[in-house]
Structures are given as structure tokens and as C-alpha cells.
Image (cartoon, rainbow, N blue to C red):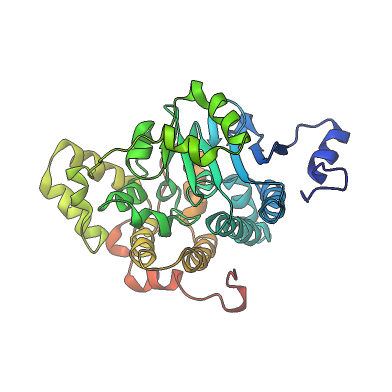
Length: 357
């Protein structure tokens, strides 16, 4: 489903060419560079299972191909790199017990792991909206290049989910409590701040992207990245220290005690999120801080399936993406009602259904 044919065209592209439909993923060789373009600009390049099944085998082929030096991944259009996974399809599948609810997360996380362990330079051009599944396609690679149009967020707690795709690995490794702040609140980082936070490794103005690409195509990636790297000494915003507590209730108490405009805004934001998601996310990041990416993905697969079995994910998607009333009725509805035992159960082994990497 995406491995090249003898003619050198990906099977997926050949199929789409014959049916005159736009391919969802473009897989090309430009010189010694393998180029992946997510090609669903009308839906902000949202990632679906078909795309995952095209990208993964091609990545593995290029990794062992002596004619390929680097891999570049980018999004079509001028709005998004990838705004996330195709959550609505997963929601519908979960409601009726369709296997997509397992397959999507399993194969997405296997792809995330392949990117995290890739043996060749992997360059993600995160020009535009980069959220959720788009973060998983970029943040574990060696180079992440932001532009002034980059908009980064992990907004999953607003839909009864958690910052997955390896969020439990990279978020706790950001400075101070910045990762926890981003994970719980879904706060949006823009432009240069994406690099300052440590999410992107480099920054380049979007108008210079074509020049950057031409250099990468000539396999000058290491040299060129040095020239565009703008190193900042960025300290975590002082106010993020308020997220230094061992419980979500403790964080809320810190914010209310502080009383600053920043604290008031974050208190309001957290009050809208799924209480269950907030508690799962805190434990996810606490555990992930000392785990390998592989172990984090195994943990997150267990969490994904717990969310599929639960209530809040379906209610969150309804309120935010379907009916768009922005008024989810969470169950449980308060932090106090979410017991430690309820949280622990979400992390339980799935036995033979666990993710294996």
C-alpha cells in the first residue's frame, strides 16, 4: 500500500492516477531526497489510516536505500502541515466497535516510533497548523523546521483524549513545566516561539522555504541547517512554575492562589477540559519523563483504548467537532470525582492486545 513498483512509482500514486482522484499522499524522489507530501489541504492534511499505510513502508524502504540520503515531510497548501488525526472517523468506529479504533492508533504509533528511530536525517517542514497527529509526524524526527506561520498545539484534553503520538515522551523533556502546561491547557505556540520552546529545532521564513528545499534536495541538509539555526536562550515563562504540583487539583490551587491574569486565564481553560483527560495526562507525563519513546507509545496505546471504552472522548468530539456547541458534559464532571483507581485502570495492560514495537 505505498511501496514502490518496479517502475518506481508508489502503488498508491499509480492507483490514484488511474482513477483521476487526487492522491492523499505524494511520495517522490527528488535527487537523493525522499519527499513525503500530505495532500489533503481541504481538511488541513488530516492524517488517516490510508495515509499511514502509504507513508510507513516508503519510509522503511528509503531508510535502507543507498540512493536516498535524507527524507523531507511537508504538507500541501499554505495553511497546515497536518492539523491532526482523522478523529471523526475514529469516533464513528469506536461507537460501533469497528477495528479502526484499534488499528488507527496502533499503526500511527508504529509510524511515530519509526520516525523516532530513523537512521537518516528526517526533516519535517512544519509550515502552518501542526497539531495532534501532525506533531507525531514531526517532533520525533531529527530536524523540525518552523516558520512564522507555524501554529503548534496538543489540544486533546478538550475532546476527552490526551496528548498522544509520543507526547508523553517529548513534552516532559521541554524546559521546566512547559510541556505539562502545553499538555493540560492545549496552549498554542506560534512562529518563533515553537523553536524557542524546543519543539522545533530550526526557524526559517516561509518565503525562504523553496531555497531551503533546493538545498536539502542537493543533500546539503547538515550544512544548510547550521545556517538557518537561530539559537535562543529561552527560559520558561515564570508563570509556568505554577504547574509544579503533583496533582491537577494542586495545579488549580496554585493558579487560584496566584490570581494573575495568566493564572486566571489558565484556570478558566482547565475548567473546560475533561477532568479525566487532565488526570490521565498528568500521570502520562510524569511516567513518560523516565521512559523510552517505545515504552511511552506502549503506554499511550493502552490509554487510547481506555478512551475508546470511555465516555468523554465521544462527548468531546460531539461538542467540539460535530455539533460545535463547545459545551461538553463530562462524566465524571469534576476533578474530585475522578479517583486514582479510575486513572490507574486506564494504564492497565491489554495483554496480547498490547502494542508491540
